[in-house]
Image (tube, one colour):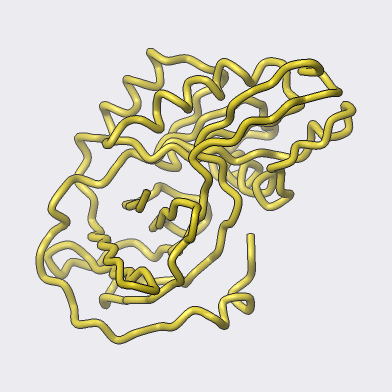
Length: 235
């Protein structure tokens, strides 16, 4: 994950406070921790394709680097994504991580590719109202991001992250546990920036550059890898 110092190009703007709720419910965020070197990961990767087609779900694939020693270096892996998975393990009182692993709204751990368990988790979180409102507005050159507590209530302290992801990439794997296979990967996280820390009291607004050919997502998450409070994305 890039540091705040790397955000010098981002412009913080003073937008007026927004007093209305988001027009549509926020999507349920499903994070998949996966690897091109993991033989048990393709079913979960395939499930991500189906999730990426849903309007009520924001599916994000974080490729970890701890499988690279097997003989194939994951072309999407980043040590920061491994660190994120380990931070979730600590927050949930776990000593180990596993792949594939899905985390729903920063709160529920689903091991492997279990569509029934995942469907139940998504349904539960769809019914939970968010204490935070998040809106994205697109101009010719930038995306404006506005975050504020719902109905003026104080919300938990949080971090605001901007994620750029690629909807689809095909990879021919020549070594490792998946040698000889060509696989399609969906919603691959390729850039993750910590935009700001937020105390949950006053509205805040920012502007970031348009994502170009990638898609853009914004997460508002309780500090310490806690629950994801709300999210939004642009295709």
